Figure 1 (cartoon, helix red, strand yellow):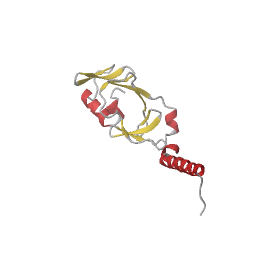
Figure 2 (cartoon, rainbow, N blue to C red):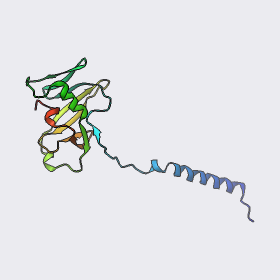
Figure 3 (cartoon, helix red, strand yellow):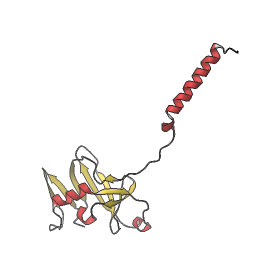
Figure 4 (tube, rainbow, N blue to C red):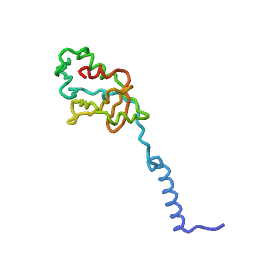
Length: 153
């Protein structure tokens, strides 16, 4: 039976350890595909201070909401409008129609407590379902309608 020198045995152990480290870290070495998931329109448990679009806004006043803007007689009451924002869902868009790219979106900024930057949504009107671009991903709006989110449009 052939004997392995101490130096050769050390090399075998080192190579075996490197193979084990590579196997344990294999999932981090393979690039992950960024999968976009269904999400709520507003972040979970976010404390919303204001929702702005052009010269219109929905603002928190204590535990209540108030709408500010040019149109004072809106079909949706402030509390109802906010509840639509809370229940709205964003589903990943499988494909975005070419016509959407040529449409001017409504830019909506949602201000959250504790964040110095607002969350910016590009909402494309006159699409069915409503198309929204948020954080460089395309979504379709479900669980509500655009006229409930932005009753002043």
